[in-house]
Amino acid sequence: MQHFVARGPLYSGSVQDSGSRTMLRNAAKTGPRKPTKKEVIDEGNAGGYTPGRQVYRGLRQDELEAHFEELQNEGICFRRCMFFVIVATVFFLLWLKWDKESMVAEPMQAKIQGSNEEGGEDLTDKYYDMLNVKKEDRARREKVEEAYKQKLEEVQGKDAKDCPECNNQLVQLQDAYNALSTHVVNDYHKVLNVNKRAGYHDIKKAYQKAKQEAEEGKSSYELAEIKEAFDIMSHPEARIYYNLYAAKPPAMMKHQQKVTHGGWGVEIGMGTFKYAILKAWLDYFDNGWVDIGFFMCIFLVLGIKVWNNRHEFMEKIEQLEAMERMAMEGR
Image (cartoon, rainbow, N blue to C red):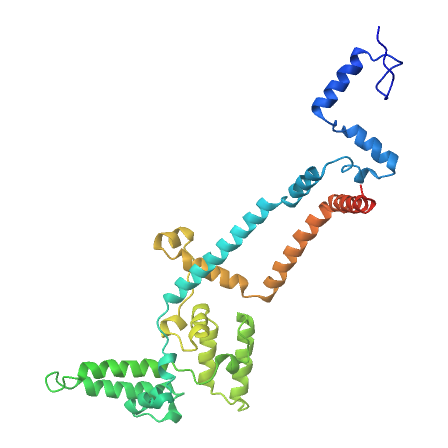
């Protein structure tokens, strides 16, 4: 019987048994055996590592990279959903605003703001000369209306055969009257001494104060102008028109009576739900506390998320510190 000399820990005595030969053949075929989780933990405890740092003991470089790549991809679905919601909301608001502004008539303010650049004629002078009204009377609508009626009677009294240009003159007179009647001499915000974000109660208080000063002769504005400023600023639709175009809104918009809302079914049936949604957004955001509340909600959600995941964050920090220590030790 042939004897073998023991040369390693796998030999028992002086003779190699069949179990040892099987282990050698398997090791030669499969290569080094991957340590189990228990062996990794035992090795980490023996080396003095804390439980939070034992996970990466005995792992290969590709396994570490795969693990950290998986950690970095956490929450990517949530970020994509939030990005889609934000983009959709922005496009929806732009669509509503574009449609709202396209339904408003072209402002006359641009027509009366004539320019003398490049030798052009001032449209304001042209319109006042057409109606034979002095510029000093531009703030008085009564004289503009009176001059418009007189000119209109003169043109309409002529025979169409004797005056082939009467129709063109009627159109020009109408444009001149509309331009001058919607022209704003003084800013209504300055007349009432309110800002653009003021509410109805603030506007009413400012109107009463300005009215009292005008009656006492302490104000540089006329009482009729103060009353007109209050009529425009106190109605939401007229106020939106004035803020957009810096011109007086139509009379029917200023004196529109408040009616009961017929419900969203009526809005959808008439196809006006877009304007109702836009008006609701404008009314909701016409307050300074809305911006503060919005950012406070964002900080609150982020704070709650960080607080709930604080243990996971600490474990990841400890794992990174363990990896840095292992790299410095050359392991």
